[in-house]
Amino acid sequence: MKKFLTWVCLGVILFAGVFAAVNMADMPRTYSGENATVSVYDLQQDPSSYDDSTADGAAAAIVQQNLDKTHAVNDVTSIVFDFRGYDTMGEAFILITAVAGTTVILYSGAKKKEKEDASNGK
Image (cartoon, rainbow, N blue to C red):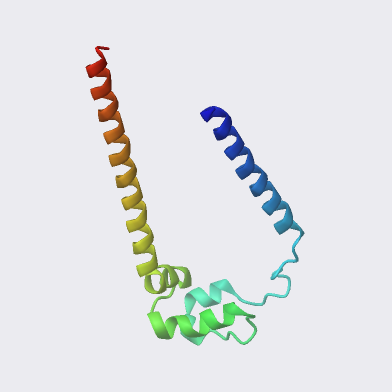
């Protein structure tokens, strides 16, 4: 029965993933990059004097505010470590707690089974 339930659960997850991927593929693109005039090289060389008036959407806000708030040249690094640092630390804590809890549960279950086997004379 456990194998059947496992296969059913895996099938449901697979079906949901394929369904989501097909629906996302049909959605319109939010940014195509065709009219982009942002020069990545110029931004890397001198981010403080870069003219970002032609950048669109969130790119303009990130380029304008990043250097003033974080003093980091790399936008991705500044977002991950300055703005999302506590969030990343919390996620790591939750992951470590889940792994430790799972290990304790599995270890205690194995010990209980060994005691039952020993008491039954196996």
